[in-house]
Length: 390
Image 1 (tube, rainbow, N blue to C red):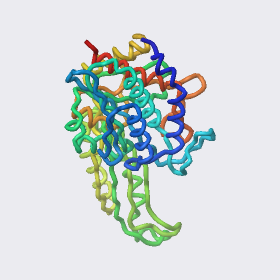
Image 2 (cartoon, rainbow, N blue to C red; image 1 turned 120 degrees about the vertical axis):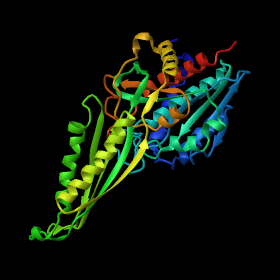
Image 3 (tube, helix red, strand yellow; image 1 turned 45 degrees about the vertical axis):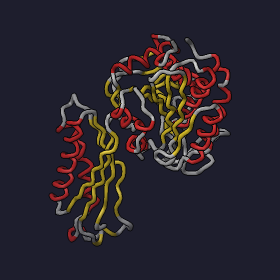
């Protein structure tokens, strides 16, 4: 089963949908226009629509035949709070908001599969098309689960995907076990003693203290955690002061921690807090740590991984399905759905010869529309495989 002919026939339509979404990006829990479009298209195709989970979430349900089997397929809808550098016609029309991660494409691929499946109905069972808000740090997946996603829409398994700018068009990564890291955040409040910049000996400089903390935190990965275990600690913001001749009284650091096991996650939180507090104390300052656990590890279930690998192979060929790959240290809130139901999260290559290679979260990123029928065909093949007629 190569790219589905019917899906390929409305490739131009999908491209138009995707580019319209790209022009009108919306941040997490604010995806009102996006969810309106999604709901309207699902209803137009005769798919039952439920709205309101996690505020702007949409679930479309398509039941065919008498089977009790059901699966869920999820796409994320939100954009990022950043400005776009592209100059093409479908660039963002909203300054400070941009689809820089491809969620516009994920939404469109799932819509394409929904359109095809609603027309052909070549399956026996129930499909829940899950359009989730606020993946980019807002934890929309967690909120949907907590608000009863799988109680209202029971599913035997749940599946998701993401575009991958490091894989060529026509290849997919389908790997069992951990594929994305746990993602946590921290803020370190530093209190020193402010004063005149020309008289530092009367002060306790939070900028100096914070600088030592930033450097010391790197010893967690290099000296405190087993080298065979993965951990990333990145301090991404440092805020202090308001003048060139004043040593500030306070400052704060923001950052993220990424890990792949519960044990290393616990160690990283403990060591980060210990290092921040004791380093500050060595300078006569005080550090207070706020540590927030955000997304758990995205861990694919073995049986479901094999199933979607088989569906992807039907579309692309066995040799284009990558079954072994090291995990990414990026976070993903589909992890909450995988904690609630068995399933799998796959990566779909989008790097072409002349487009699709700029990394996500870059101001010049754009989703590669060439892969829209690939994702929609994989979803459709999965449904027809998992919910066979007869």
